[in-house]
Image 1 (cartoon, rainbow, N blue to C red):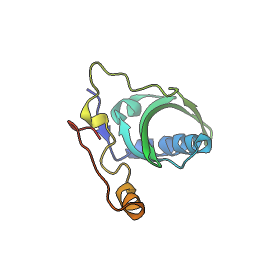
Image 2: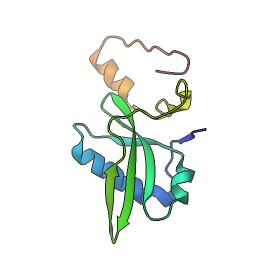
Image 3: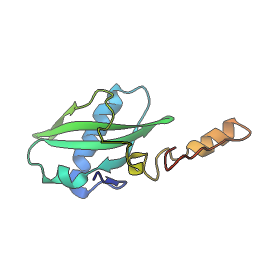
Image 4: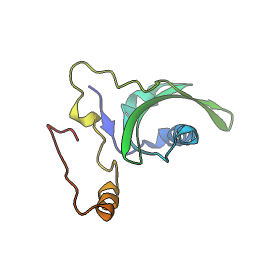
Length: 126
């Protein structure tokens, strides 16, 4: 089963930072990493690593997969998916929803613009 963690393991921090910087150079809004999927699998890889991240920016969160390869003092980064959803059998597990901390500040920003905000939760999804 897929596991989602909201903290990045020390052994993956440089690769995650490189993937985020690469993605943000191409994005229309600034994203931040709010989760990593199956970090244990990425840590076991030698050479190129496949890193699956939950990226949140603006009013949206997106799961994205990257291949990150160390080249001297820098990293080569490639996007492995092109707006492809995370492949799972059946409905996605609730933990693939944005993890705790995703969209931090969204409610405060929304309340500043509107008189009230309606939050709808359905079976663990939002």
